[in-house]
Amino acid sequence: MPSELSSLFNDNAVHRRTPAGQAALLSRSKELSRVESRFLGAVTGLTPLRVLLEMGFDDPALVPAISRLATLGYIDIVEPGV
Image (tube, rainbow, N blue to C red; front, top):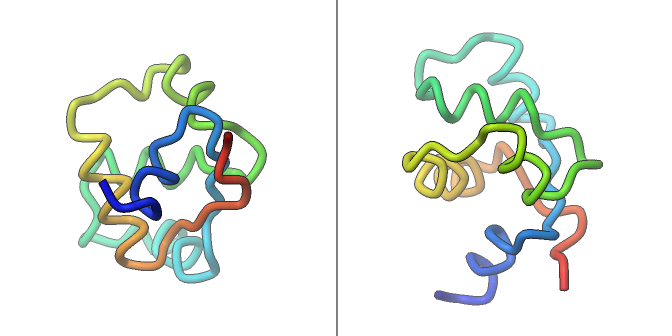
C-alpha cells in the first residue's frame, strides 16, 4: 500500500473535511454513498480513525469509502498517526 494510502488508514490518523467535502455534505450530494456521507459527517479534524471505528464505523465498505473521499478531495489528513 503506498504510504499516502497507509496514512489514511492508520488507527491514529486524524481526518478533516475539506471545503469541498463540507459543500458536498451540506448539499447532500447524491454522488456519495450512505457510508461515505456518514463518515464525512463524522470527520471533524479532531478524532482519530480508531475512535471512529469504535463508534460503529466498521462497515466493510468503509475502506473504499475513505479512499474515494480522499480521491475526491473531500477529506485530508490533519495528523497521519504514528
